[in-house]
Length: 492
Image (cartoon, rainbow, N blue to C red):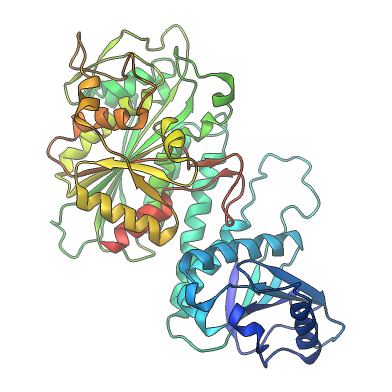
């Protein structure tokens, strides 16, 4: 999307869009053309337009000096205008422009919007995301998106250009993650993910280390390898490093992402409806890649390490089974009680390896449990961990970005539930497994954290939308976790 600032609208625009706050209804903006003022006043008098959030009113212009379509979009009350509302309205307007095949638009920016123009543009770009890579007969104009936006500022702002740049950088990263998560597993295996990491490392000049199956066997990554017994070549791990801190000896933040290419559940096979979207089970690893796409572009001055544990949880004569006992990279042994609790097996090894970096903190991110969606629905990711300050920082980053999180407690009794009679621990509770499933997954991971500060993000209900997407989302992958982690790192 090309965005430019101009003193007046582009007459060749498909739409000229006016932002209207509810306070302006009593005194229609003076800069409106006379016929537009008359049109707006009439609609207001008939109570056909009240400028509530996201409300859209449009008409056509016969004036050749104006774009052919004039659009009024409601921004609600100035007093209650927020970054979230700005992003939502951007999403609503972005979808409207796409539906109306508006390739070029001019948009008036009231001074109140300057503060939240980044969120507004972000919402617009995210709302127009299309995934139709595999459509052989694309619907006519289905790919039409807004390619050129002219912003007419009511009041100049020396930070506008920076905000525009940030909106494009972050939106591009989120849409990149969405595409990774939307890709089907027959098109995207562990090698594909590693290749993406190589591209990013090359473009951004990051250090990259890749462990193939033989490396993992030699080093003893038992959790990753066990999950992959049915598809051994998919067992891979990559480590990508950003030395962004002024003090090169500063302890890094290590982000460990789950990258299960497809999760059948193994011998604890998932019921049919839950299998439909299990290509999304690599969303944690995808978010790691999304973050590393922007670290340098946004000049984030932190040392950050990304670890992605990659694999596939399938079924054949070699697949791991309930009652198997697995030795993990940490040396701890795990009794397998549920082969569908595979993400925690892989993350356990990732957490253990993260300790080698002597981290300031460890963040794990995964579509770990369906229980997260049962507990919190599709608007909040669950967070857990052993450090209150870290959880509060993640919560704040979620509020800042509308990539929301909510803390869940790991009760001491939940930790006892994963004790095993025949091994050190077990990967699933029995008897009460249907209760507090997310927290018990967190309790399992906690055994591998040691003395490190740790926060876990469970995107089980937020990484993929099958219905009821947000105003700036579309059905399919949401890119959840990407903006959250970026903001978390920036806030630090």
